[in-house]
Length: 573
Ligand SMILES: [Zn+2]
Image 1: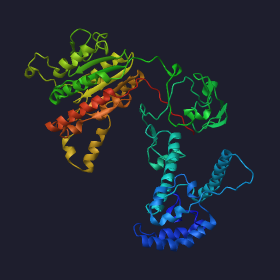
Image 2: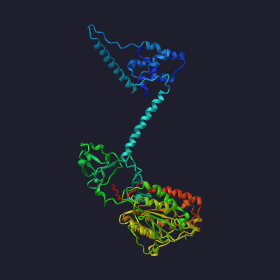
Image 3: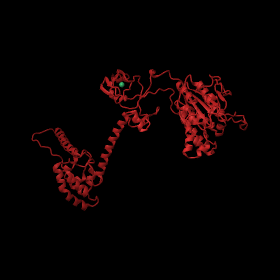
């Protein structure tokens, strides 16, 4: 009893002891804990707690203080009640031998014996409390709470690790997500649910957690072309079973052999078998043709509506500040086409930009087709001059008086798109279309001239009758833009639409040009204080809209893009 410190002075900083081993000690200590600074009460408490300690020591003896590596001896010697216990601590007794032995051997034997003795006791202590760590109970009052908190924290960490593992095995929900959690078994069930079944894809996520596979070997099922994934069945190191069609495939040698280090690698460490989302660098077999240069063609409106808005200056600013970050290599090309009732081309190959006007929009052709697109890097200074000097004042020349410019209210948006498509269709590329008014010039037979279908009086009346009258506005008036869009899609051309029109511009019809060519649509009409098709606008709202447009344009110009893509989705039946 006197060989060991009192239990209220020492306690493992882990889990409480089991009820079978020392339930009475725990009840005494936790229920009648004495105040630290009252010596009289401490002495009384010691006397009261003696029987409990006896029970504990008879069942499981804790180790002596010398065997505890982290025993707080300094604190142990400070309290007056602890002093006798400390003085009575003996060293472990080693049996005395009668025959003479070497002193060094004797010391070694002592150490070994002491260590072995402490090991046995420590193991018992560890079994009892899971962990060996001495704690001053007089100073640590909330030891039980701390132990429970540690246990909960450990459980939480384990759960998070398991969840992380599950997340790795599944596809990243930010990259690909299904609209339904459970797929209906039959088409009729899907119809009854009245929920849309689709998949949202986010390519070019730029997520650093998605592994990128640089090797040329892409392991796929020979029957259904499924990529090897965490859910296939590995029969051994050389064979795997497809989880979609159950065909047994062979693992190619390159998949489990690292040619750089000349060593075989464990197949279970391959990222394809540990991640639901993988990026492969596509090899030549996956390309229809060699990668084409990045081509950016800006088609923007310069009608009276555009001049009144004043967006061209914001557009030029956004482009000028983003020139360093526009994606592309040394082959990148850039060009500009403007339109009102005529088409305006810019030759940026000369020392100073040359402005060409095409009044005939019914029989369009490309003037100086070789000069309309310039190399972005080699003509950088000319492009900067154009953006800084020419574009902000367009359609005025720097020397002209703006008040003498006759505003053009007609918008030949359809012919402008046709000529832009003609310009970049041989290689493919991106057309950025900025629209500020309703398309009103061009061939009537083509369907590129749109009428104002909205009756402003119907908008203010909130009734079923007016809703029925407005419903046709949600459908396109003509299919000109859809047809052109599908042609664009065939030639790897995409059209992104920025609609800044404060009045009715028939977005339902024009938006088809982006919808079917894989482009994006940015609509600012409601932000510009549009007066419900009446054309009235609020100057401060327009200013806010233009700032937002400029910021959006900067992001749009500098974000990652892809110019050619093929999407295939494979699933089980
Ligand atoms: Zn398969």
